[in-house]
Length: 473
Ligand code: F0G
Image (cartoon, rainbow, N blue to C red; front, side, top):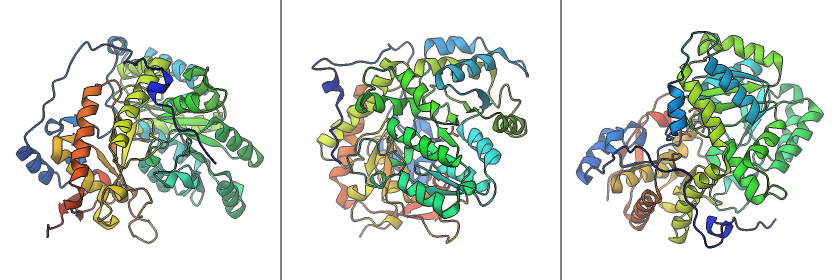
């Protein structure tokens, strides 16, 4: 199938530039520490960017999670926090925002995304059940496994190829799903774990046509679909840009339609929803809601705060409304595309099409001489920090962890280093500095050696693992 090339921001707007739909009211100084300090900091952090102190980082692209700049309205909302233990008015505002913009009926607040993943996994997975999904996410899959489930990847093959031009590489492969249903039986499928966009594939979107077809297939077997809505607003931007019939629809309408084909969602509000902490679970099924609402009091807090302060819920409710504005989404994804276009122009291998929240450097093509068990993506993240204090994160062999049955590394097809762009935080000049640093690291790629792991924690090892550089010849 041939796909048209994604439109650049320049093409969408003719020759006119676009700009951020905000101006800066408060600044937070940052500075680049010396090369000497960076070398010492990297060694002390065991070559793991998660273990660096943020004061030693210049431009922090570790994650777009909890790193957004809040608006003046959100900061004002903090002052309206109702810190009552039960029945806080801010919860009702949040509930109303989720119902209005995502369209689900019942809302359970949680402290962040993984809190909601925990609740939904425990509520619907029985030991031995299978959870098909469009590629794993680290915390999501772990909660599914801890609840006794087995995650099975049913994303289209194109998603595993960092250079494939498919515009909706997040799509579910319905034939793979059908084969799985035939194999294990529909009653063994806990639910479909559908993420929009797909973080580990490079921020790749799911098309509206795909979710509609998925709904039809699942309806034939009575299978539920739960959405990881963490970056669903960004997913909607790609539908608006590339899918027939959506060019003139507002993001908010596309979001509501997409969610209407699913039975509920879990949310890390630290991403799309523009807050520094928070999450929620929302479902349409009263029985699932009942279970989740009961469990939230065990694991998170009462069902009208779920681990958040009242003020956090207020900022989140306002953030939801701001997050679906077309000019916001256009400039947010536009900044990611700007960085990606620069790197592509300079011949640096990245995942294409460019996704919604981050640039993913393709470490296998970047360092073809470093074998995957010497962690090329981890090496690249370390090298970028050493070059100019830019912090990214590994999304490859280390993140994939070990197969629980064999104990071996999982060796994923995608060995990527992610540069995630926080929302409303950095300017285009910061993106230029980042691009130039990536280019400098690329230019000396053949002199770069890999790493060996010297400490490996049991769970989610990428957060705390430590490495040492392999000796130079
Ligand atoms: N789902 C997706 C797709 C995510 O990207 C994340 C977090 C979560 C769920 C879990 O949410 O962190 O609020 O508990 N991703 C972060 C990242 C950590 O950097 O991509 P959480």
